[in-house]
Figure 1 (cartoon, one colour):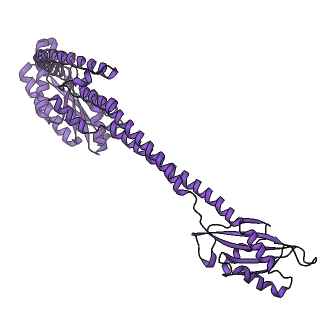
Figure 2 (tube, one colour; figure 1 turned 180 degrees about the vertical axis):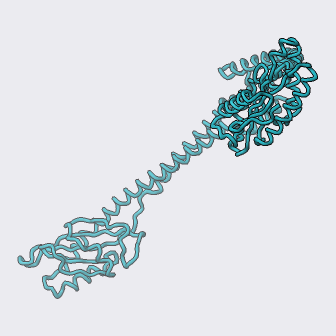
Figure 3 (cartoon, helix red, strand yellow; figure 1 turned 120 degrees about the vertical axis):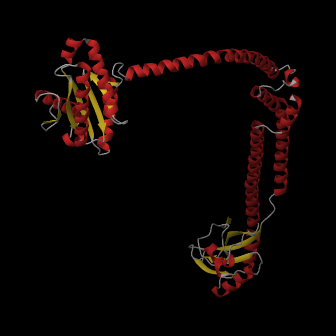
Length: 454
C-alpha cells in the first residue's frame, strides 16, 4: 500500500517543486530578455558607428564634385546645386556664405530642407533624428545624415563658403548575427544548467522532502525504505519520524483505552453534578417555606423587567403585601401556626397570579408581586380578591379574633412615572405604610386614598 501511494505521489509534483520550476523558468526568461536587450543595444551602437563612418566618406566626393562645378556667378548657383542633387543618395543641398547665412537651398522634396535650417558644422556628419520626415512621411528603413564641408571662395570679398547636404544611407549590417549567436548560446547554456540543476534538486531534495511530508501527515503510511536507507540528514530524519510515529501510535492506543474507561465515570459524575446544580438552583431562587421566589431573584430580574416595560411603553405594577396581626398569631398559636399561614399565603398568591407574574417573599411576613403589563385598576381588583380570600381562610385556620389579614400598597410605571425600579419599589412600599396607617386589611394605591377596608 505504501509503495503504491509513493509511486502515485511521485507522479504528481509537489507545491515546492512547482514553485521552484516556475522560478527557474522565470530566471530563464529574464536571462533571455536581458540578453536580447543587450544584443539590441550593442547592435544599435555598432550600427550608429558604421553609419557615421559611411556618412563621413561622402565629404570628400561631394567636396570634389562641388569644387569642379564651382563658380562665383550667382546665376550658376542653381546649376551647381542640381549637379549635386543628381546623386541618388543626396536629398537636399544648401550653400552658405562666409557670414553663416544660407545663400541658396534646393531639395528633392520640400520637407527634406528641414534638416538644413541651422548653420553648418564644417567637415562633419551629424545624424538626423530617426523620426525625420523626408517627402512628408517617416522613413525608418534608411538613416539620414547632414554633411557639412567647406569650399574656398573664388573672390576675397566672398570669403570661404560652405556646402550642406542631406544624405540618405541604407542601414548597414551591424553584426547582428554574431551577437545573436553569442546571446543564444549563453541562453542555451544557462537553460541546460538550470534543467540539470532542477533534475538534481528533484531527485536529491524535493522528492525526499515530499516523502517526509507524506510520512508526517499520514498516520498509516509505511516508511519509504529507500528514504530510510539514506545516510544523509534526510535519512536520519526519516528514521526518527518513523520511530516517533510508532511511539505515537502506541500512546494513542493507550489513551483510547483510558478514555473509554473514563467516559463511563465522567458520564455518571456529569449526571450527578447536573442533578445537584438543579437542586441548588431551586434552593437559590425559591423560598423553601412558601414555595415562591425569594428576594435575591427579584433583585436580579426586576431591573431588566423595568427597562423592558418602559422601552416597550407598557405598564408595570408592583404590589407590596404585609400580613396583619402575625405577631399575635405566633404568640397565641406558636410558630408552627405562623408557618402554616405563611405557606398558605404563598400558595394563594401563586394561584391568583399569571404565569408571567413574579411572586416574591420579600422578607419575614412581607410579600411582593411583580405584574408586567397590568394596569392599576386591574391590580386593585386582583389585590382586593386576594385580601378577601386570605382573610376568609385564616379565620378558619387560626380561630382568632381578629384573624390574620393582609395590607397592600400598589404603584405602577404609567401611573406614578418613576425614574428607576428602586423608585417604583419605594412608591409601593410607601403606599403599603399609608394603608397600614389607614386601618390595615386594605389596599392603597400610590398617590390615592386606601380602598377595600375590612
